[in-house]
Image (cartoon, rainbow, N blue to C red; front, side, top):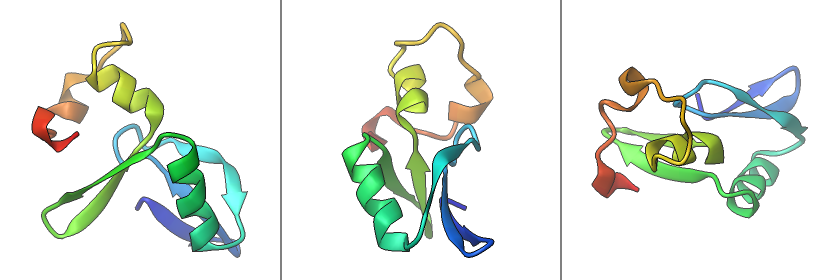
Amino acid sequence: MSIQKEYGYEILTCDICIEPEEHAFDTWDEAIDYKKEHGWKARKDSNQWLDVCPDCQKIKEGKKNKIDIKKFKEIDDNDW
């Protein structure tokens, strides 16, 4: 789900909070560059890659007050 083509544009979506990025990208490479430049993290989970937005990373690190434990139950601290 991380980067999918919709209506001719590449859409970047966090695999934890399922929130799409505000920007739509013309190419997959542009979406990848944006992820790198804006602090997104990617990790391999079984057979697929998961993309995690900066906000969800802050929640995982305990830097945000609001947390949904169910979203993070399968993410090991060593995966960051």
